[in-house]
Length: 158
Image: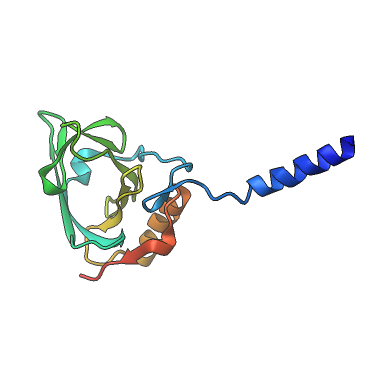
């Protein structure tokens, strides 16, 4: 009887591993997510091209502006953010959008992986219309690490 109980427990434990992780939008929410410690809002400011995105996107460019006097960042659609932690931008007006996480940016601030923790929106940005192959691959690796479904990532032609 004891052996049967142990065997049943092992079978059930094996089944539990086949249960898919919770998915919301384009991201597995059981995966960790965090902002890059390399983030610098002044260096991040400026024009970016959307070179890859999850889902359909009509935006081909995004602009970020940083105001050092107020320590705020203005992002796409004029949304204003403050940086509570490196790489994490929190909307100033509650109820208007969600946090924006800059998960990765290369040392030269030429390519970045950006998205919402919920997985509702995620993009790879570059300062040029086409990212270099190595930086694009690095951004994809980071997105995969943070639980994004790379099969749904589509490159955007400019």
